[in-house]
Structures are given as C-alpha cells and as structure tokens.
Amino acid sequence: MSSGKTRDWRAERSAAKRAAIIEGAMACFLRTGYAGTSVDEIAATAGVSKQTVYQHFGGKERLFTEIAMETIDDVGRPFFERLAALDPGDDPKAFLCALARALATIANERRLIDLRRLVIAEALRFPQLARAFAERAPGRTIEALAETFARLDRDGVLRIPDPYVAGEQFNWLVLAVPVNRAMFDPGLRFTEAELERHADEAVRVFLAAYPAR
Amino acid sequence: MSSGKTRDWRAERSAAKRAAIIEGAMACFLRTGYAGTSVDEIAATAGVSKQTVYQHFGGKERLFTEIAMETIDDVGRPFFERLAALDPGDDPKAFLCALARALATIANERRLIDLRRLVIAEALRFPQLARAFAERAPGRTIEALAETFARLDRDGVLRIPDPYVAGEQFNWLVLAVPVNRAMFDPGLRFTEAELERHADEAVRVFLAAYPAR
Image (cartoon, rainbow over all chains, first blue to last red; front, side, top):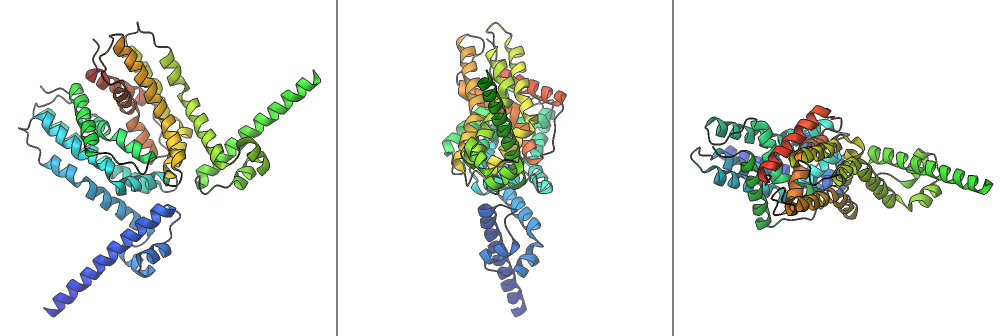
C-alpha cells in the first residue's frame, strides 16, 4: 500500500509538472511566437528544469503539437458529444440548431483562437505543424459533419448529395464570421445571444439548400 | 520643355524607388515577420538608403499599411468592376455566379494570402493594423455586397431582409473554404475549375436561402 501511495504521489507530481509546462509554454508562445520561444524560456516560465521539459515532451515541436491537439479536443468536446447523441427521430431543424450552437461557442474559446493565430503565423516555416492543426480543426469537425449528413441522407431525412461539401458549408456558415473577426481582433468576445442568432441563421441557410424530405 | 523632362525623369526614378522599397519590404516581412523586420533591412534589401524609405513612407507601420491596402485594392479590382457592371435586368443567378467567380480568384492571390497571414500573426501586438486590414478585407467587400443585395431586394429581384448578413454569408460561402486552406497550406493553388465549381455551389446555396421572387 505504501508503494501504491508513492506511485500516486509521483503521478500527481508528474501531472502537476506537465500542466505547469503546458501553461508556461503557452504564455511564452503567445508572448514571442513559436519560433521566438526556446525550451530554456519555457522551463524558466514553468519553474521546472529544461531536462523535465524534454522528459515530458521530447522537445518544442512535440510540446506545441500536444498543446494544440489537447486544446482542440477539449474545446470540441461539447460539439462531438452533441453529434454522438443524434437520434434519427429528432426534428432535423432542432438537431441542427443544437449542433450549430455547440459549434459556434468555439469562436469564444480564447485559447484555441490564440493557437490558431500562432499556427497561421508559422505556416511558412512549419508547414507540418500547420497541416496537423488544420486536419484536426476544422478537418475532424467537417469529417464528422459529413458522416452525419451522409446518414441523414441515407435515412431519408434530408437530401444531401455531397455530404463532405455540405459539412464544409455547415462548418463555415457557423464559424467563418466569428472566427475571422476573432483572428483580427484578439480581445473580441461574442455574447451567447449573438452566437445563437448566428448559429440559427446558419441553419436556416443550410436547410434552405438541403431541405427536409 | 527641358524642366518638364527633368520632372518626368525624377518622377520615374521616384516611382522606381517606391516599387523597389515595396518589393524589398514584402520580402523582409515574409522572411522574418512584421515585428522582426527593421527599416535598415528593408533599405538594404531594396538597395536604397534608410532616409529614402522614410521619405517615401514615413516608417515601417505606414509602409506595411500602404502595402497591405494597395494589395487588397489591386486584388479586389476584378470583383468591384464586376459589381459596378450590375444591370438590374440581368438574370440574378448568372450575375451572382459571375460575382462569386470573381471573388473566388482572391484565394489564389499569393501576395494577399501571405499578407493576411502576417497581419493575423501580429494581431496581438499591432491591433490597429489588424483592424485596418479586416475593415478593408473582407470589410469593404461585404459592405459592397450588402449594398447590392439591398438594391436587389428593393428592385424586387430577390427577397433579402438583412442585406449585411447576406453579404457576410455570400462572402464566406465563396471564400471560407479556400482561404482557410490557404492559411494553413502556403503552397496551395486552386485550379480555375475548382474555384468555379466552388463559386457556383456557393451561389446555389445562397439562392436557396434567398430565392428569386
């Protein structure tokens, strides 16, 4: 039992250090950009040794990539949960509005928006990083929407001949306006009412183009 | 007559220097970012004196802003010309397809896409620059679309209760997919056929949401 407690304590300390590194790294990246940040600075900001940063993440590129992927996954969770809860018997308009509203909240996720800005900034110098980011966000969202739309078409709910194109359209009808504004205006926050109105209007346009059968 | 020729020659030399500064500055900005570029480097790259850079542009911020605004205006010209040529008697679908196709070509304008990436990169440190950029692109495009849609609504061609929202939707139905991809994939080029298909599909969705009366 005492060795079990030691392991718990070690795991907790390791998790706390990992969290400190992530927080410190994010602060450094935002202050001086990805290219301008060194592992030394990250270690100093996080209050750990450089060796500890390497033990946890291997290096700067993997650290940044893990931060980006974890953030995308955290931020996207409500949307994917909503999508998984799809009941074919649901009214398509109510379902799509709930989905669009869950998606729209992403525009207020400061951490993801800041990361997106950083990745775009470094796309010329670090194309793999940019590609990995884009494949996850919006890539995975669009793929998940496409699967859902293929199912709605198959089940005879909506007529959607090209589910992937429809997925892109849905994603950007909801996100293009607020995400674009946030890219150029870092302090911007949308009210819940603004995002809901915008999401509902996106669904109105989408359902006009892909009417219920 | 000889003094007129001297003036011509001076004006030509001045214009050539201005063009060299713009080209040199753009190369520096792309290589090291806006914040990482000094007027010294720009002058050296352009093959002019630092004094000449200041004479022409006042400083780095005005130089960057002028480059951005000139590029936006150059790139947007075909779209605005198409818009100005609107004839209320035109078939709305044909007119909107021509407009969407003119707008879509912007996604292949490497210079504008690179500038957009730079401005987003610096949005935290230089918010005025970012705001000025966004107000011009996509701001002016959306405003011009809104005016056109208000007119189409007034003339009874299409029913568009909120022309500004419709302007945003049209702009992003055409540009969100290709511009987002280009942000994360700097080498990406779209074929003319890809952009035309995408533009036509944007118009299909738009006209479903705002049908002809």
